[in-house]
Length: 98
Image 1 (cartoon, one colour):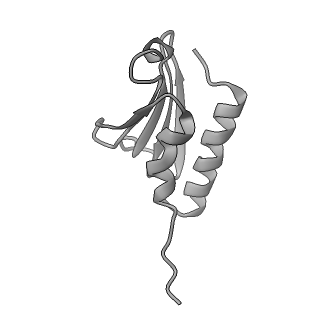
Image 2 (cartoon, rainbow, N blue to C red):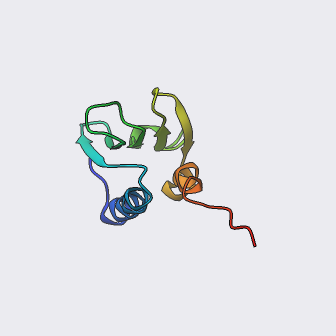
């Protein structure tokens, strides 16, 4: 199992923005028979702060995309990658006061 090129580009774009914001420093990708996952780390030696997983076997159920938090809890599931990445992209928003 692997990510499609457009999926990987979207994930790496988010990763680059999170690195620029100082929230992430390292990443790892894992490609198994049933699923592909992208893990992002604040520091190299700790648990991932976020993990994005693509599991096509769940396509007809709750969706093949899942976002897991630092403790392994499911933060969001869905059929579309963009919808699953919303909680991470929300961290990049800053309120500007005039």
